[in-house]
Amino acid sequence: MAGISGVKEHMQVIGADGVPVGTVDKVEGGRIKLTKKDSGEGHHKGHHHFIDGSLVADIEGNKVRLSANADVAVTMEQEA
Image (cartoon, rainbow, N blue to C red; front, top):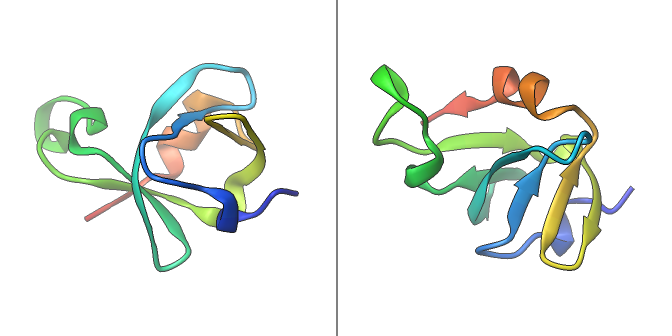
């Protein structure tokens, strides 16, 4: 497991299936804070979402690969 320590700003976050989840704004409190532009639509729009650092499976170049598929990972996002 790569761990969250290697996660840097502007890295692309992808699910285990290779589907994009978002872009790293920064790491905060053991979680990946995604940029607001990746916040979705409706009531999700305009604020940050967080992915728990325990979902980081690997870091491949400028990509953070999660241990869950993208469609599952977005259901685990925490809003701020």
